[in-house]
Image 1 (cartoon, helix red, strand yellow):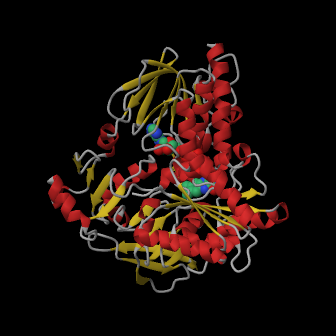
Image 2 (cartoon, protein in one colour):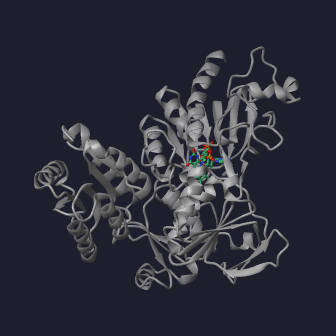
Image 3 (spheres, protein in one colour):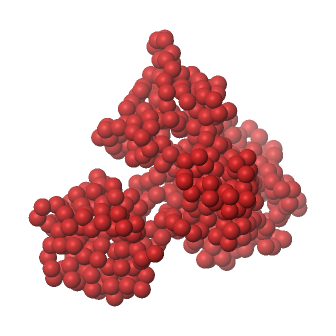
Length: 552
Ligand SMILES: Cc1cc2nc3c(=O)[nH]c(=O)nc-3n(C[C@H](O)[C@H](O)[C@H](O)COP(=O)(O)OP(=O)(O)OC[C@H]3O[C@@H](n4cnc5c(N)ncnc54)[C@H](O)[C@@H]3O)c2cc1C
């Protein structure tokens, strides 16, 4: 296969030559650098590359060009190569337009002209964007292949596990992809044994559990030590923030997650409000960076391992894991966040994973191409999910009890209003879902007493709120009436506080009613439910953990 392409586009021959020279000097070993002198030529080049089956990794385009503007070229390139990174080259006077373009056309970055020295102004940005592209792009002919039926919950579980753990794989749909029969014959897999994972060396896992997949991929499922300074349960933003700080402060730190790193934030297609990412950042990308950072600093990470219970033994915290093993730690951080609330409508449980999904289920979005899908819920996560799905489905309908302007942030309401294929259905409730082996139709009931109507849909994505994951904590941990964990100054509001807290000192800010057990992020009563807040609390908890370790 030929090398992936970096495409530079500028109508000024001198600038074009300079971009090509600088890109070649650093990237020619791994990439082919091509140039075009107008937007039209750039687009034609991208289309030719597509026809030839070549990979396009990045387009860097000047903004002011006669004919087609840079932003328009980059927007149209996305239709041809959705994963290619898109960078706008601007003069100082155009920076405002570039920032606007990041919002409107969802560009990845803008670079100011001139970019001297390239070691400081050009290469760090390009390196970073190419890393992201490499992480997302799927191996074509080789690598891990997952074969299964689209509407199988078991297949969905494996897809979700691979994608959430940022493991690239190629999806081959049984009955649709022409290559499937050949691969099944060659690997000796019967149709009843699907889903199956075929590894690069030809070995096969038939109908696997996520745990078996992790084991086969060499992911550690065992903690390396008998005793830790800090065990963090939950690798969402709070847990990841704590892991980075815990490890960098020299604490023996273990991070455990039942599913994958990233938590709720990992399922977000675009986080717009996290500091330092002017173009927004996908949850997957933020997670990839954070887990790499935590592990580089020395935090140990095991996944998929669920913590099912905790007991306190002479001040040590003894955690029981899903497979019956135990881990002992001096301090414990609960960063288990929240889980989606299950929709109670009849038919939902039977069709979960077979047309009904919780959250945006980014793994399933491409299967919605050309279909009509429903998003149920009116919060920000539902809005983000609808925006993401609108790039794949022909029509997205948001089903809500109330008007979304009452429940969603303004910027999302505006984005939705400006998206042609999203339709709002306020004042309606999902009454039941139906289908043979997979979701086929929904019955919607108007809240004004109107007659329920049955409608055909391709998929339903449920976002109807969340509940805390706090049931695995020791009995002495006090919670509020909704089961969120009480910490620090909120503890005295509980009647049980005086009976529970026996130390002469006050609980530390994020400490629970059990000394040495801390809570951060969405699982905590009064949490802000934001990525930045969770990361901040996770980092802050480490400072308090250190204080606790000195006190005991
Ligand atoms: C779709 C979506 C979009 C969002 N977009 C934004 C946004 O744009 N901006 C923003 O600021 N916020 C956003 N949020 C909110 C933000 O993601 C959350 O506030 C944040 O993720 C909370 O982080 P956390 O670490 O506390 O918990 P979580 O993210 O919920 O992570 C908890 C982790 O704990 C693990 N876990 C749970 N129980 C156990 C157990 N018993 N054993 C082991 N592991 C366990 C889970 O698998 C999970 O990985 C969004 C949320 C969603 C769902």
